[in-house]
Length: 165
Image (cartoon, rainbow, N blue to C red; front, side):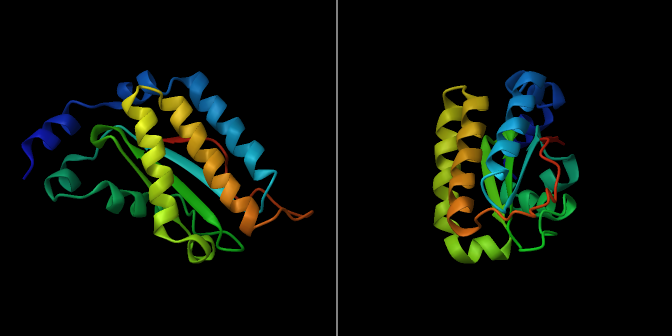
């Protein structure tokens, strides 16, 4: 049991999310997701969570495991062409995870997602949370453009608004 991690999670609340990503930043992120989705046939979701609940925390749940849960809860997998991507930020762990549906993951693989996450985390370490998320959205969009070009009849299958958990 990592007591430092437990203390970080217990002392991190929803107010921390709004401190690093105020409503204006969340609106900017929503607009960036909508803009990039006009250029490709993929779907991007962004979710941010201040901390884990105490039961998963005590069980040792990782940010990656939680991201997979959120991917399922938000039904990011439920796209026609299996091309949804979740960008998940767990503030208490200073960790970014990306979970991609099988259609896009098969074309890119985990190293691509890890590279984008590392770039975002570097911005976060400098306190540039909004810029880090926007860079991540753009990077994911750039990959989706290459592998899932836009269709003329492309529906927006998921909301573009960030999810604060």
